[in-house]
Length: 191
Image 1 (cartoon, rainbow, N blue to C red):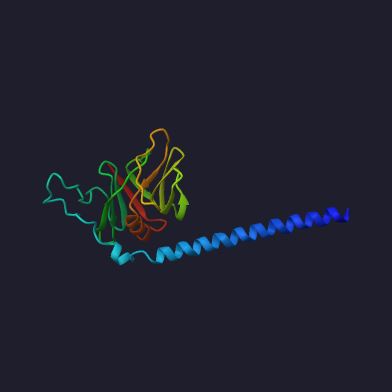
Image 2: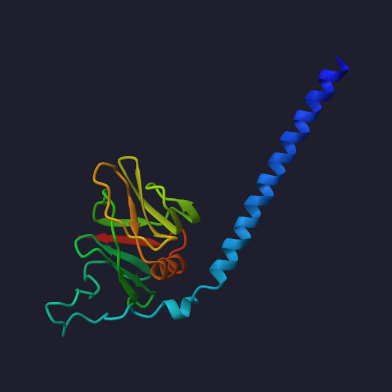
């Protein structure tokens, strides 16, 4: 009997050791991610308009329409235009500091005003790809909708056979949105 209680104690110690190693590994990963984040462009550098951005007045037909939608509210916010597949990061002054193209998934939120409800620095996307700078703001019939950037830089075509709400962006744009949109920030979706 003494031998079996010793074996039980050994199993418990081994389990606790494994759990401790998992926690240490997790914190090492977080520290590495924080170091990667500190090497990225600062908010001041990221707040510049994307190349080719214009006020929309003197554009040629080949240029994308980058003018901030007029029906997108006031103040500090993120504006997401469904048809144009474009995002604007708008400051308190009502001016867009940055605009960029996004790559939506299969589920779109209805036009309206939302708020950022949660964020994650690094997770695995619903398509199995590791993503960063996840900013979630809506739920559509049980599908969470939010912005994210793939660590490998991919912006794949959405899989029409699956209901997913990940709106992909380029990594530099994802970093800018992450810095611009803490929890509670308004996200205005327009057609």
